[in-house]
Image (cartoon, rainbow, N blue to C red):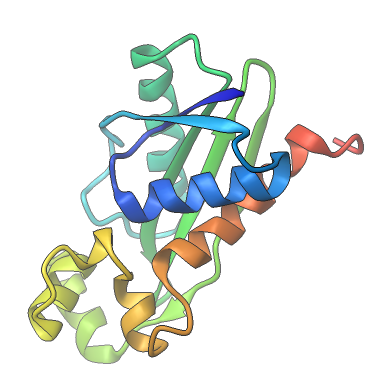
Length: 170
């Protein structure tokens, strides 16, 4: 059983990581250890590079907290070119996998509020009345009528980022 450290305690992200590891390595293949670590970037990362930096920094910090794990996984959500998305970074003792999730285009009113310094989660929570939306279905769930959720989209990106750890071509 793999010891997998998640660089978050967010239930939506942890669920995505667990689902993806079970898809790739089989049911019951991992034990999740959730840790809260800093990203080193603003609470609302802007742009692909800043968001990727946040995920990589979370991995570094998680490795310091729990150095004996088999895997460390970080998911950093950001906004790039008017869409919300995330970067997933996964490391083990000698490899790194990275993948970017699908992107959700944001309405102009939300983009404007974020440009004024608000976080996407705060803007969406205020407009929907749902507290801590980012720990639940996220903006993706709201804007897709539940067809997709934050966790489902993240899970796909985690599966992609796991490719170097199971496929011999890597």
